[in-house]
Length: 541
Figure 1 (cartoon, rainbow, N blue to C red):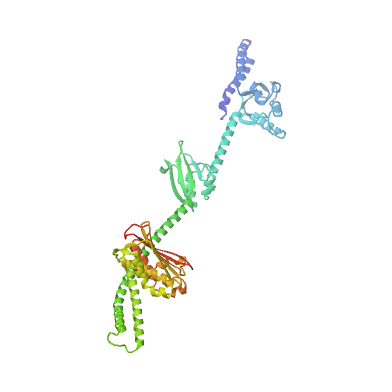
Figure 2: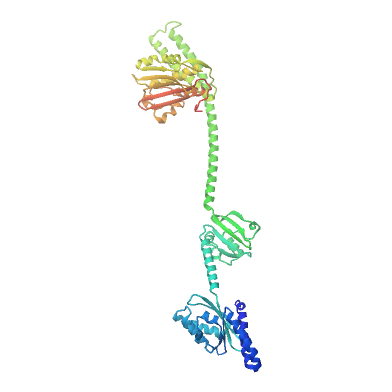
């Protein structure tokens, strides 16, 4: 029926011709003149019509055909003459024009004769050897004859082929998308979707076909545990994007209404991104918990350190009183203030008691000083100090040991004075000298220098002792730490000397630097501001 519209004008012409023939056979001679004129006009009309037209009698013989009919059939005038049968003309057409293999010609001839005989308007299409497409249909007339219509539909077929190719290209393109793609019409029926969408919804893949209703899809999705967002809801009146979990996957669903109704949507798999986000959140929580735990541990350590410092200060204070008594009585006994002891061995014992007591008192004083430094309770009283006098005072304390080991002492004090706490500076220099003298082997050298560099005073004490391992350089600053070989540790000591030096240096706004090469010796440097409180780059706070 769809092709009756284009066939109607030609059919009217054909009917006119039939009428003309009937009139011509029944009317008088005078009427024949009018009929001839009418016939001429109809024939002229068929010649200018672009469609081919042929008129057949009830015995399927050609009455008339226009030039377009012959041209579309690739027939010469001699191949389609009035009186020729439909079979003969069709056979000639198959032999000369139709792009049909020889073995298929009989079958096509039989089909054409069958449709021609039925003459019910059925449409047949074929391609000519020249590459043109022709559409033909046949209609029964009231007198038992037949009218055949042919039309060149090459442009139409090419347009259809272009549409099909374009559709195939579009489908191929959307199948190449990494995201799922889907289109629903205004009534909620699936128009198309790509391969990726079926992969994202494996449980729905069998029913994701054009024409499937969203109602059926939602029902099926619920049955298989998938999540679909229905189109056409309030949420999709404008473009939206939301993340939903479907099965084991996280999908970002984006939907956009179409101007003609319906929706177009995408489905992006963000499972990996969600997993990374979750891992990052877990790591953030873990780090936050770890930081909180570190904060609690630091607070507990500070509290424990304060408690330790308080305990050491208390116990040191309590030890000093009996120690002073012991030292006082040992001095009285050693001086025999109240008469002779009666035995020379007693004098040796009393001397040993005094020496041990003084060592213990020094240890107690050092512990008390360290506790005060760590608690921030130590104060300094700055004064101008002559460095030469300070160094020589400290050297004098170790003169006996220096002489016994035949050590060479080199002193080069380019800087003459420094402002600082006298007691603290004596403690620092004395402790550094004690280590140098103690650990330098017999016949070794100790060099003492002072320099002013960029507003700081640097007092260096270098020895030729055994040196310190690189891994131990930081630990030697810690309280009660003794590092090095067993031979070095056998020299004794409490392990508080460098702790005190480091603490007093910080208290002055300076720092203690240590350089050492195993087997060659150690250099300790006191880097102090020219005046306490002056800015320095690094005091290791």
